[in-house]
Image (cartoon, rainbow over all chains, first blue to last red; front, top):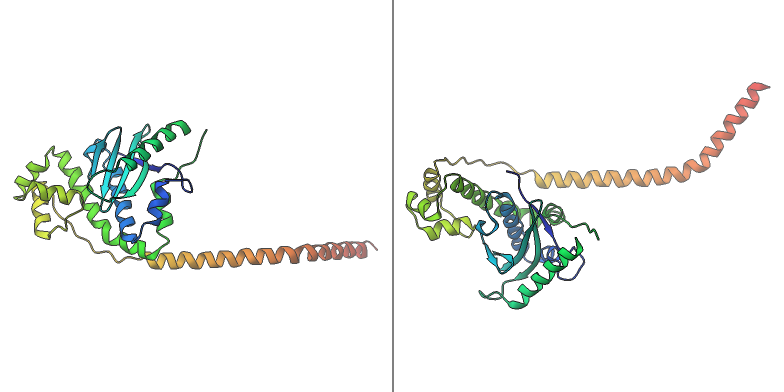
Length: 113
Length: 146
């Protein structure tokens, strides 16, 4: 089966852009790990999103934990994985602020379509 | 409203300009290649992590960590997991040529930029020369007609 396409929203240059966040991660080994993880979950196309490694369903969206970072994403028509928000993992507990921002970005994504 | 969103490949292309990133990618990629292959094969065989662990004489927690690329797997564990997945391990060491390619790409860019500069120079030269050539042709035609 063909792999899913991973896209980033909000686009680069805008506030809370996950793409810009990954681009700026130091050390770059962390960024490399996140990119490989996203690549892996896009390849495991026959599994449901929450069955993919490091992914769990979180309210309306999915949370991917990778090393010291968390990424929030949702899926869309056309086998799309929309990465909505990325942040540094500060504790084992998911911060409400991060989740709220991801949900706001999700709402904006559907508004901008 | 329609906006263009970048894909994972677009971001990857941007990050790969950094040689340190390319090195880290080479170090981490085998773990994730393994993760994808183990999970794909396990789901083909419709095995749970626990069943795979039992078959491979290991723990479910270890299979879970291997599948999250969090565990530095031993070769002996890998061969047991492969056996449990009715598969075999094929190992290949391939010399990487990436830095060379990037250097080459850099050289091509330099050549390309030089060409652009020359074209620019030639354009400014040509505009004056073109007039000369045209007037020369005209003079030659006129001389021939006489």
